[in-house]
Amino acid sequence: MHQTESFLVRMISEELEEGAFSRAMCTRFPPEPNGYLHIGSAYAIHTNHVIAQRFKGTFHLRFDDTNPLKEDMEYVKAIIEDMKWLGYDAGEHIYFGSDYSEQIYNAAVTLIKNGKAYVCDLTPEEITEHRGTLTEPGRNSPYRNRSVQENLELFTKMKAGDFPAFSKVVRAKIDMSSPNINLRDPVIYRIVHAEHYRTGNDWCIYPMYDFAHPIQDAIENITYSLCSIEFKDHRPLYDWILRELGMNEPPRQREFGRLSLTGVVTSKRFLRQLVEGEYVDGWDDPRLPTLRGLRRRGFTPESINSFIEEIGSIRTQSTVDFSLLEHSLRQNLKASTIGVMAVLHPLKVVITNYPDDSAEALKVENNSENEALGKREVPFSRTIYIERDDFMEIPSKGFHRLSLNSEVRLKGAYFIKCNKVMKDPETGEITELHCTYDVHTKSGTGFTGRKVKGTIHWVAAEHAVKADVHLYEKLLLEQDIPKDESGEWMELINPHSKVIVKDVLVEPYVKNAHKGQRFQFFRHGYFCIDTKFTSNEKLVFNRIVPLKDSWNKK
Image (tube, rainbow, N blue to C red; front, top):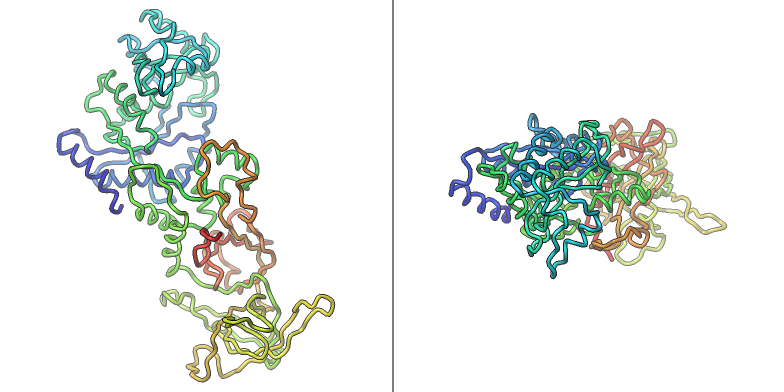
């Protein structure tokens, strides 16, 4: 990581020099298996993994699966797969919080025995009302002074399933007047009668995240719990739990800034609204910032990691322009991607002095910045297609492409001159151009005669491959998504975030390409073959990114 990594490295280095731990460095990424990873997740994974490497330690992937109502093995598999794709394979260090259920339960029993926790019968609404506000202290629960024996008996009955869901909870006994609301007797256990995706019906009580997390860290000998800045106010509770349980050399929670990107939303709740409301075509929609969506769009893991390294570790909540991620992608693709010609809005061109029954294979370089990618053969014939906006009958000032009675170079081929324009007699729309070519201007022959100002791309009519192209722009119109957004997405969604262009013509080189393969379309940007909608009958390309930044256009 770059310049701002130093604050984490410096802080941890100082603590280690002071003898914070006698054990090796160990960090973790603890996702809840109730959704898919996104670009913010990648930032957290990278931070924990890099710190572990920096101090020659180990990195754990631990699923914090303490809520049976939302979790599923589908998400577990997806998270592991996405992390491997990104380049972070936890290997043998994959763990599940549900495996520690007995130890976490015993920790709660310990707190009860020590008078540091109690069973409370207040409803969730009453607990919230008793908690107070940022300016007013909370009020003690009427059940706060139950005896240790009564609390143990009630907790045992909770575990046995004797009470309805959410009718009782276990709360830590800390300080209802604390200025930190997280310390006002937080709930640490609740009753949930639901089948868990791994433990089945073994349990009907489940720990809250803030209680389970530090205990799980301690069990795994984690040294540093590195998490985003919104958990800073939770750190005193993290420390309190470990201290009251008498943990030796307890893990230390340290925070870094949360990453947000302009024009995208990473909140699981908001993402779920977009998916379930069918505003997008699933969790892998190429407009979403999920790793599945970015991968299907055509982003590379190298570009994502490069982007994260470029912004470094940030201290506070930060919003980064999405164009920076696009820039990292362009840098990654420009020397590694084969360029091909694709005509999105075709205009027919007949080269009248080219033989009717003839065709030739022209050698065209695959990448002007990387000779190692070699050349490919591109078929050329009498009838070709060019982009409709590459022709103007009467050119405007500064237009250097094809116009009537002017010449232009066909990329990798010949000079052509437009001699005649054919139009629809009813609409006046241009339907066809009649041109002539100069056989002596063939690319690669060392021609040094007259020059032309423009080069345009083209596709031979007889050999063209038909495809659909999905052009993507930012999904949301607002740069910064309101935190209190209620889900009225129609006002926020960019109506042009996905434009489908049908029957695009692409040179035949792409005919045998595989799903997910990336190409540069001359002048149009970087594209990849869509993994969801491509079939034997239809080739579909996603535009990964334009050749230049388009996100800041007004």
